[in-house]
Length: 323
Image (cartoon, rainbow, N blue to C red; front, top):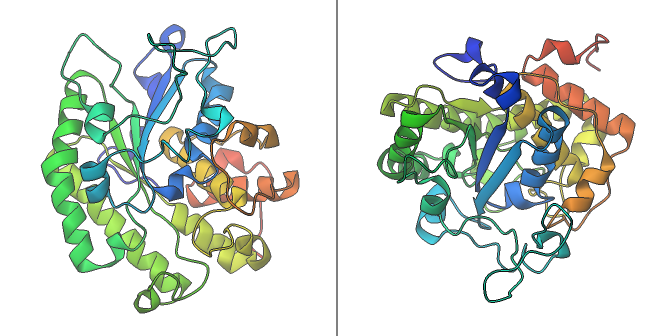
């Protein structure tokens, strides 16, 4: 569910704008947990079912990074996103857009966190965001030393950017609680325990990140319980839970990214996500090695699981029973 000082008032962008002006702007800061199967593009298309063309998303992503090293090194998607045809930027007529030198413009995200979130010109609304979705390296929130490292970079670097964002318009950080790995011990994680214990440790650390930002003076900070949704599937449908992961046992498959996107949708809007459309993955700039897509039945179970974990009761028109 959502963590915030005002979590009962989560009405999304519509609470700030009338229907004629309603739009939504979402930024992403993180690593391969987000760029596998292109979660930013997937969530963007899901939001378009509600907001139409008035959806804007951008990102600063890099494989394997923590929030600290992402701050230090910036975007790393030039090769992974940049070589895919779906990264080519196009105008409203579908024509390739080019820079002043005639080079093809590609959508690979902002170069750095500062480029993505800085708001130096009060008259320029380009970098003002409604929500900024952030994920740390999965193991970092679960260990005291790395938890402290991220806490310090949130206080010293990310926090001031969000404070400046909120001077002009409400900007809500959303911490993505990543899931425990499918197999114990993957990536030297043996000490983090089984799926239940691993999930609990990551969640506790992410809740600490939320509190850090609240203490910094950010009015609203949310926690997206993706790890809890994966754990629910682990406990109630082990076969489908297994399909949530790529072959390396820690990256999400298209199944996992769909569940992740549904949890993010529920968290930021507190509304039921739209029904699954497999064509959404056709715009992805990067796909997992195991790129099998969920069936409509499987996708619906994952969508309902996101609603259940996020307490979006209006999603569950038919009362579901735990297995």
